[in-house]
Amino acid sequence: MLDRMRRRLTLGYAGVFALILLFLGTAAVVGFSRELTMQQDTLLAQEAKDQTANLLDGEDREVLASGSAEYSWVALGPEGRVTDRDPTAAASGTLGLPTKDLAALAREEGVAVSETIRGPEGRVRVLSVPMRDGGEVVGVMQYARSQRGVQETVNRLLLVLLPLALGGVGAALLGGLYMSGRAVRPARESFERQRAFVADASHELKTPLTLIRADAEMVLYRGNLNAEDGALLEHQLGETDRMGAILSDLLLVARLDAGKLEVAGKPFDLSAVLSEAAERFGPRATAKGVRLDVLAPDELPAHGDAKRTAQILAVLLDNAVRFTPPGGTVVVEGRPRDRWTEASVADSGPGIPPEHLPRVFDRFYRADAARTRGESGGGTGLGLAIGRELARAQGGDLLAEDARAGQEAGGATFSLRLPCR
Image (tube, rainbow, N blue to C red; front, side, top):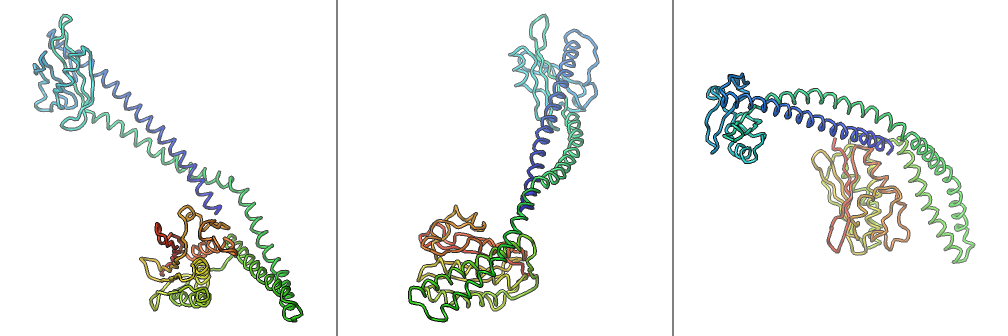
């Protein structure tokens, strides 16, 4: 449990740090891209100005579009018709010029307008500048530059940032592992003290409990009691047995938490274990008027601990018989499933409300809904928790579901999965 908490804390630290890096990295890339775009617009504006002077004033200023496939220009008249263009466009490409909608907008607004468009060979940045002669707009100059170079620059930035981000996340994982270890240390120490106390107390209480039972049995054996006193002693013996079962469960939980419970890992026949468990609970089911069916093949290979598996099935059958009303049915079924061998115990009792399903395997958790109604004795709330821990100790798992959700009959199904080899 504490190890899972430590992993979650570590992943939480690393996740928060990764989100911060992602935010900062995204902001850096977006800001860098915007800065490049602004610089590009400034350059295109200067180029458009020079080319406009070349056309209107007969000047001979050098422009970047001359013989370059990265740049191109086109001049449009007042009505949007092409009046002149880059003479090398036929060989190097027009980059998608002219863009008449953008030219019309620049002509109407009377100011430079820029936009990134999709050209024949990728994204292109286009700047449309009104051409003025004597203060009058006589056309529009469109200057374009391929975004390929800009994208390559951004990609190089990403190639620099990505390893740094991965290294930062790795460092966050290591730092988070260290910090989470320090954070859970007090809880681990407290948990260890609690576990040791539970184990010691459970062990020490068994001896006086055994003596109490022995004395009560001796008094009953002598037979010098009236009926009322005999009933009191019978009740005392029953409560002693119940307390003994609780102490046994607590001791088992303590051993599971300490990792000191021996769990075998070898092949065994799950069908045989199912049959033996059903045979053991058969008389109890018959006495209550509950039908107990076993559906399993003659042989069902599984890998794990047959003794611990029988203990899990005993918990499931005990719950199923207890919560199934007279005239109901409990079905024990075994089957192979993919890489698992599965055994399920389904009852026709009141079922498990959906809000309780996620917590049925919590220690000492007892739903106060239909499945505990009318059960004066009930369980300790440890059986299912122990069952899941024993299943996971064998490399498997124990799952619960409401077998007939939405139906009045209810019913619950518990499925035990074990490795098949």
